[in-house]
Image (cartoon, rainbow, N blue to C red):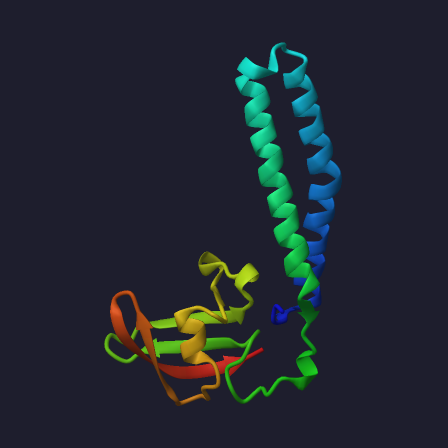
Length: 157
């Protein structure tokens, strides 16, 4: 049994819209590509047909994965979150205790993670290391570069 994944209503709606698009438009486009490739002759030696069938398999795999994600997705009730500690959807500013560099991250679900946008996964080493910490606490995080220590500078929603 899969555990629940929490999302904002906006993020879950975005996932559902993408799934709907893939099921309707993606499958339709894929069927057209396969039909066009099939019309080009002998299927046993038709690389375009083979590529289209492979792409169809990948599309169906993506659809299946998204259906699985949505089946365990729950909308997070932000009113039940303890705002005094780092948790999912917290915006946390941290400072590296060695070099003084500061970073601001939003803690999100795995599917919403985007490091360039400052969104880190709750299940990443940084996310796990920051969870449950309060302003002023030190978080020791094991990263590929070794152990890093960060001070929690601020915490907002």
